[in-house]
Image (cartoon, rainbow, N blue to C red):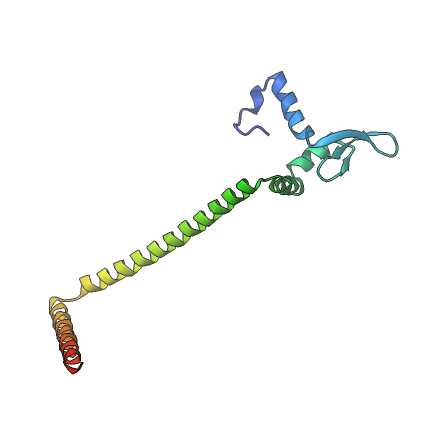
Length: 146
């Protein structure tokens, strides 16, 4: 139960505080027979054995109930802050994905261009210059007709 790994060197007072930590989720009561038992404050579940009650507190069912109760206790500002945090996280994730895709595309292009022989590069440059010249001529012809 000790998170820092030094469970062997506990003092007397620390053991009691750990017991009180899980006991705060329970009320001491009696069952129909009059025997002492522990009743869960959140869920109303009865336990006759304190060890089972302690195990229940560590379980998934109880943790979910506690988190749902805490969600219900949030104020409007806390809800807005949590929503803004989630939105920012989603935007960061999307931006990272876009940056990664962009980097992959650019590195792919650079790799293909780097592998080309110089005569192919020269041929492509000439082809683009001719295309650019056609655009200029088409634009000039279009202005002349107006």
